[in-house]
Amino acid sequence: KEDLEIIEETQEEISDTIGKLFKTHKDISGDIVNVIITKILPRFASQTSSVYESKMALYIVDDMIEFLGMDMLANIWDDLYKLLISLVVNKNNQIRQAAAYGIGIFAQFTTKDFDKYAPELIKNLQNAEKIPPEEEEDEEDWGIAHDNITASYGKILFYQHNSELIKKNMSDLITAWIKNLPIVYDDVEQEKQHEWLADMALLKFEMIPANCLDQTFKVLAKIYNSKSSSDATNEKIEKIFIAAKANPQIQPVIDRVYQSAENKIKKKIEKLINNNA
Image (cartoon, rainbow, N blue to C red; front, side, top):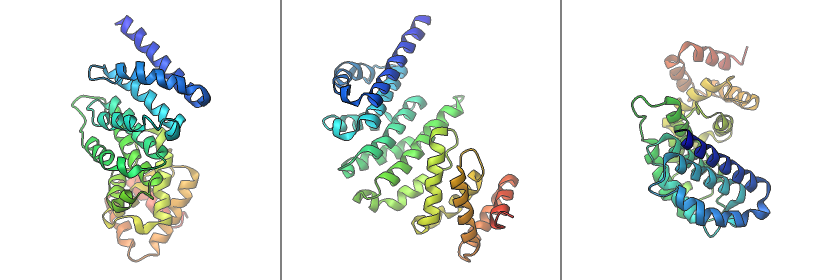
């Protein structure tokens, strides 16, 4: 067991070092990528790989996508995509989390032809979303994986909204995103995802499907003045509720959310609709 732990710690250090090289020495990363493709990924991302090895492979792939980009990795971009969509439906929480995060940054850094990736990418995200927590497993591990699936929906909407296929499926994707908010466990994803929701509700309210209105205001009230919401987002939420209070069509939504909320959230809604008095 001690030997295994030493091996895993060494592998993790190698993965971290590779990620730092990608980030800080992009000009010399080409040779490293060739070694990774021919030597490391075939071993770490095979059917016989351990959970730890698969996770390390995904961390390296995520770093490659984020720090090197599509232009530098054009010849293997499709292969990286195939690896991510195959592992995002893995029942292991840690593997699914790393793959889901990778799909989000894949959407962020794919600069062309996203439509050819979108159908299977979205289909596998939806399948990953349906994977339930196993009995007696770590709730937080499952939650972080689920948060990253939710965040990937958000990144697809934010970074690929001009994609023709995304435009056609915009309402369904927004629904999938909003129904899974707020981001609960992943501190890295929380602020940005919640800011995007506030921006949509403030600037493009008409894009929110009618069946998501209750959930939208419920999430906004819940995150208001919390650690998962920045000062800028809190100000936006205040403006959203002030506008909603003055809109007879939206007032019933606020009433429903208020009636079903726990006392802590009710107090936040009271403060918001009374102009923070």
